[in-house]
Image 1: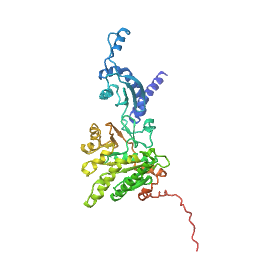
Image 2: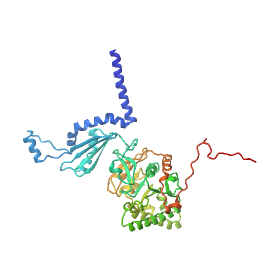
Image 3: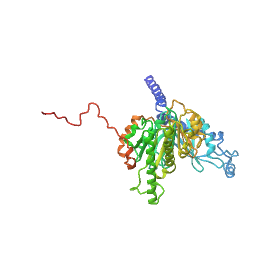
Image 4: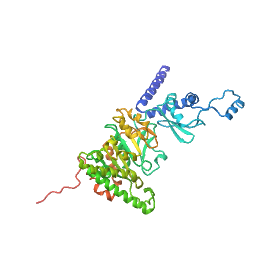
Amino acid sequence: MSNVATVIEVAGALSAAGGLGYAKVRAPRVFWSLAGLPVARVRFAATYHSTMDVCGLTVQPSRLRAFMVRNVARRQDVQPVPPKVRKVRGSSTGMRATLRLPAGLEPADVAAASERLRHAWGVHSVHVVETKPGFVELRMTGYDVLRRVRMPRHLPRKLASGPLVVPVALREDGTAFVRDYTKIPHSLTLGANQSGKSMYQRNLIAGLAKLPVGLVGIDCKRGVEQRGYAPRLSALAVTPDEASQLLEVLVREMEERFDALSEHGVSDLWDLPAKVRPVPLVVLVDEVAELFLTAAKKDEERRDRMVMHMIRLAQMARAVGIYLEVCGQRFGSELGKGATMLRAQLTGRVVHRVNDKQTADMGLGDIAPDAVLAVTTIPPDRPGVAVAGDASGGWSRIRTPELTATDAAAICRAYTHLTPAVAALAPFRPAVPATPAPAGAPPLVKPRPVTE
């Protein structure tokens, strides 16, 4: 009987070990929650003081503290003071610790030691975020969250508070990367072929399709990228001539909206009463080079007109609820006059894998120079990985979840009822093809025999 019990115990232990090993590869969230998180919390608590000391993140105690230690605690050795741990909480992707910095330390000191902290506590990565003066948050991830992207089910209240917030990708610290058009109205997305740039656009369009917003597409590659989203588009231009006309209409629409703001004595679209507030518009430019490059001299006038309209929209349209999402492989001065001026107005930057360092400099060199090296190290076998930066100088690695063009088109069809009717854009409204009836479905009209 004892032999049977021993066999059962050994088999159970082996099954548990095998299950954990399988979960570590196929279900890292489960493995981290069951095994990784408890081990990491114990290691963090047991080695925190010594780790901070060897990483140079301690300061000499104050005179009052030294006096109390020597005279009250009766100890002659006064230990250096590390940042005080205020809160530690775990999640399905990692662990977060809020630290109160002592006098003499700054967030940059902790950020500089993040790689050493990662190795000391055995986690995948450590990111340092300043939450408020004197406090930092260590965001530790237990595994590579970008290997298999799973978006958070719920956004934090701070991120989700806004009328135009779209979760697009996952950051490497396990949080969601969102496009908030009220904070960053215009954005530029760069990337080489097969870098995941189209995947980013699909996730963005799929998120925007669920919001009460008008979508305007400009796809001068005859609409091969955006034609599938036609049921949700308020306007679509598929040639340079159509794009020129559409941009001219958008500029007139912008001017009319400014007249409405002036009439009501406000300076922002969201300050208008809900009854008279026009619907926000997001202009999606698939390949910006098609608007700049010309094959003949006779097309230069049209090109200059389009560039002027794009610059005017980028400079002023935010206040009236017209936002730009510009996408391309390269975006530099070689495109021609006005390219650099337009790029300077695009606050948000997302750069995928590129073919040369100069393209990375075009996207991030003017706002986050430290991020340029991160772009050049994106491996080709990880499509969708990108570096996102903004005008504040901050940047982070992100990756979009996999979404096929068929699924994105299905989402657009499901939310066709949200497509606003903008009178100025009516001539550019794309024709929506009728959905074919499934094979074997009964006819909608009952046949009648023909009598003589």
